[in-house]
Every structure is written in structure tokens, then in C-alpha cells.
Image 1 (cartoon, rainbow, N blue to C red):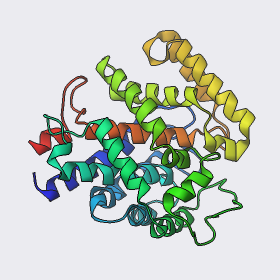
Image 2 (cartoon, rainbow, N blue to C red):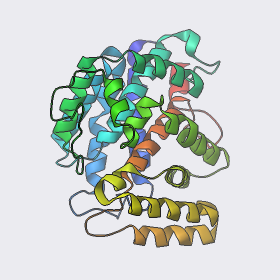
Image 3 (cartoon, one colour):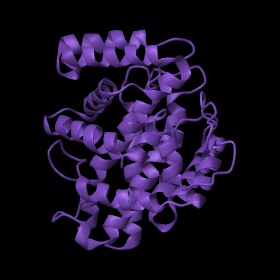
Image 4 (cartoon, rainbow, N blue to C red):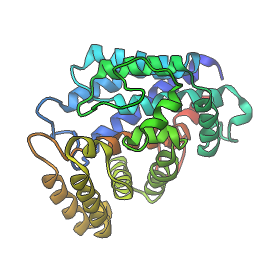
Length: 311
């Protein structure tokens, strides 16, 4: 396996993770036929295409530079912030995957990267992030200009950081679900999202239903910090309760559950998109990426993707 082949596959995995996430009809999010006033499904398609090269070559540069390059590429194609959270999650995951793919000893017998090895490598990389990584990431955040960001007493993104990227994320972990992933070595991604998606696919669910079930599982597990920032903890708690109720009704696996999903989709819509579980969508995309680099793409129980390309 040569370097260029897995760069191409990492780019495809990152792009596909974004496309599968946004294409699933998830309550409260943009999806086909369900746009926001200032953000359309097509914005997300353009953003997914834009990040291919920066994420595919993530193994060749520091994490912060990959984040900045990916947001710069997105900015050239989308006028709105569609993928900052996703990029913040996928950049370290892609670098960890590239590291594993470059070391034959890290691969399974099928030539794939299993989740346990990927997480261990990711943990090692996060522990070595630098102030330069933080500086590049802060610049990316300012460029993306996400709504509801607010200010922080320490290491605010409007100023230049003086700590490493992981240290900066740890400071924000209590108020931001993406930052919490850095502080916990991507706990929600590896312990909730990827396992839920894997189970759903092995149970025979198609990608849309599997992604939707993963999203609801994440949302039922913890409140969405994007909603909390924009509309307060009470609304975020209510949305989490709705997700739990939907899953209790069977979710995508029953007619009653599907009816509950439809009601939830209506309940989460308003002109200001206050109940948009954006962080949960980002974590869903990260879980999809982990499953894809594990080689589980083409069939519900079989292989494909990176493992097929590496043989």
C-alpha cells in the first residue's frame, strides 16, 4: 500500500461521513428537502466536497493546520458555517487513521483500522498537540464564525492562545460537546456513536436509518451543547427527552417510532432553528468516519472502503 492510495481513501471516508450524516433525515437538522433559512442541503454538499484534500492529507501536517486548511477550503465554497464541529472532530481522527495506516503493525488481518487501535493512536496524538495547533484552530474558528459562540474568561478564541490545543479544549469541555471529545479522547465518538452505528448496520438497517438511530442515541445520551448555547439548558433537556421517548417507541425500527420521529421533526423546527442539535450531528459524523475507516461500508455486515483499497 502506497501513501497516496490511503490519502485518497481517507479523503473519501471524510467526505462520505459528511454526506451520509447530512443526507439522513434527522430531526432539527438540515437534510434533503429540509433547509434552514440561511443554510441549505447544497451548502453541506459543497462543504463535504471541499474538505477532501485537507482531511485526506492530514497525516502530513499538524492537526491545527489541517483544521485551518479544511475551514479555509470550506469558506471558498460555502458562505455559512456548515462543518466547523465536524472538521474539529475529523482532523485528529484522520491524522490518527493515517498514522495507523502507515504502520502495518496497527492494521487488522483485513488491512483495516479497528476502533480500539484508532482511539489509542488518537489519544497519543492529542497528548502531543501544541500551542501552534491551538493558534491555527483559533484562526479556523474565527473564520467559520459560528453562531452563539460567546466569550470565555480564559483562552478566548478572539485572542491568541497560550496553551496547547488539547489544554484549550479541556477548558471548554464543560460547555462544548466537541471540546469535550478532546478532553475525553473522543468518548462519545468511540463509546456511543460508532458502536450504535455498527450495531444498526449489522442488524440490517440501511445507511439513512442507521445514521438516524445513531443520532438519536447520542442525543438521548446527553444534552446538545449547541442548543444550550443558543437557547438555554431547559430546551436542550427537552430535546434530549424527546429523543429518549422516540427510542422508547422503537425509533426507526417500528411504525410507532417513525411516527414519533415525524412529530419530533416538526417540534424542533422554528424560524430561528433554536432547537438544532448541531453538536450531536457533528458527533454522528465522527462516528460514521470511525466505522468507515474500519472498512465497513459496502455491505451491511461485510467489508469495503479502506480495507478493500489496502489489499
